[in-house]
Length: 165
Image (tube, rainbow, N blue to C red; front, side):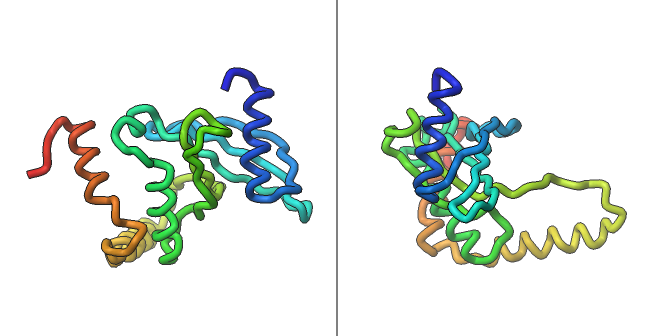
């Protein structure tokens, strides 16, 4: 997007897909990701509640290696979130390039960040191990995970420069 006004207009269009009567209050970039540009969008929903979502646009290297990255991420998050794994809820994806120039995904904003200052390292490790076990117990044949083998192969080829035997 070229100007802040164009960005605001695009985010208004995105938010009205969630709630036609919502009012966008502000948006700001989120830093730290390499696989996607992320923008938080705060809005007031039709019931007057403050809400925030994340708009994720895949990085160019992701787009080069995956023809449908927003749909792929949406489907994986839907399967993981639906199984009760701690993860952001996916709302929708758009690959039309009508609102933003590249595909995008809208997901739940989870406030917070990692906290490694805990004094209960055993409890921290136990919680981490339980969540990893829940993830590994998921059935990889379920619909949301169908693209994972192809994604692993694309990742291997594009980043590591290797091929899968």
